[in-house]
Each structure stands twice: as structure tokens, then as C-alpha cells.
Image (cartoon, rainbow, N blue to C red; front, side):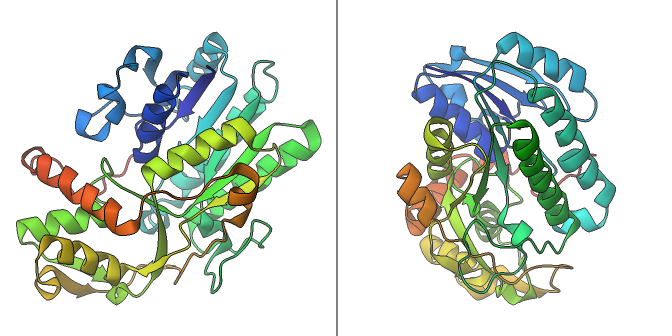
Length: 329
């Protein structure tokens, strides 16, 4: 058993990680700027070891002293960090919010953590968008070429962590994931959004015709990856986690429609593409397989089916919830 602090614990991947870590017998502290929402997004609520999880509603930008005090009191061996501004297109509207949260606040956090004797490893959840558009699967040493404020903020934070590791020996491990998906995801993300629109008879805007290509990794596989990093990841290293299968967004929506038995053309409508959108993010995950023994276990279509089942089971509640992204500074 280890003590693990999870920042951004109410996020989709964060909540799934909390649930998986509880199942492994760990004790957890969760920190998130928003209060815990509906249990349909928080799988750990039904975990028989839920008492081993403590949640604190604290904001990286406004409550840093309280976050530091909570971390000192809990003294985790591992900090797994999902926290941050997470939308790409919206980062063009308020770029300063992305830089403040994803870079400035994070550097303040790292400056605190580097002096703590209880910390064995800080695991950062970053993004392949730091590489910009990639035509072929890239390894972890690929040059950065961010093309949006969102990606720039993450690339800067990653470079800062690398400098902290070189100068201080800060035990940071960088992880980059393909697009998360599965039951419990925020409703504005492409898979649950496509399911909701198809079931409700609404037209889903297909930005740029849906030709951009993405890989996907199920949230349970992402949680297993991060637990493997906590156990065996090497400080100073970066690891990619991706299925190796690349799907145009149009194909993702087509798969959803096929599983629902609904005509694709009745669900989608054409929409302009988003500014600075990269055509594809392709990562080579061989290093994670070789060094951590990680391989995805949930097939793409299986994950789509699971998500459809989750949406159908909770559709009445979801109709009362917002389906669009709501920005918080």
C-alpha cells in the first residue's frame, strides 16, 4: 500500500485512476477545484474501499497554500497530476488562463514539491499536442512543435519539469496519452457527445468534416498505465501510452452510429474546422511496453459499447446536465 495524491481528481481520467488505485489497496488524497459532481462520473463512489479516499476542493490558482498544507499532512509517496485547463479550441479565447493554470501555477507547485522529503515520484499527465501534427508515430524524444495556447502551456510546463529534474534531481516522470475515452467521460467529449446527439435526434457538428485523426486509450488502461509508472517509471523519463490504432473523427462517429443502429448522415452536419487544429497525433508506445509491460487491454469498439451502455443507463440524468463545455478561469 502507498499513499497517492491525485490532482484533478474529478476529471474523467483522474476519477478512474482513483477507483483503480483504491482497488490496488492504496490510500488516496484527491484535490480538485470543482466539487464532486454526480456519482455517474465518479466510479470510486461505489468502490468498497472508498473510505481510503479523502477529497478536498481546492484550486491551484487560489488555494496553493492550502494545497501544500494538505499534501504535507498526507505525505504522499506519489503525486499524480491530471489538473489543468484542458480544452484546445477555447485556449485561443483565454490564452492567459491556460498559461496561468498549466504553467505558472504548476511551477509554483513543483517548487514546493521539490523540497518535500516524502515525495518519491511526481507523475505528470501531459499531452501529445506538444509535438504538433505528426505524420508517423513518434518516440518520446521527438521535438516539440506546439500549435495552440493549450499545447504551448503544456510544452512549457514539460520543459520546466525537465530543467527541475536536471538541476534538482526532482523525481518527475512525464506521461503522454492518446485521447481518453470510456464510461464516465465529460459529456462534451466526442464519444459521449456523439452518443447523446444520436439518441436525442440532434445534429452533431463535424468540424472540418471529421478528417482529423486521433488514437484512443480507454480510461481503465490509462489508470493501469499510471499505476505502472508509479511502481516502475524512472524519474526524468517520458512514456507514451497509445493503442497504436488511428481513427479519423468521422470514423469514430460512424462507429457510434453503427453500434446504435442509427444512420450516420442523420446525425452529423458540416462545420468549420477549429483554429490551429492539428491533423493527427501519432505516438509510438513501444517504450511503455518494453520498460513497464503496459499494453492496452480494451479494444476501441468494446470501449464504444461500454460508453453507449453507460449513456443509456444514465440518459435521464444526462438530459438535465449541460452537454457543452463550460469554461472556468
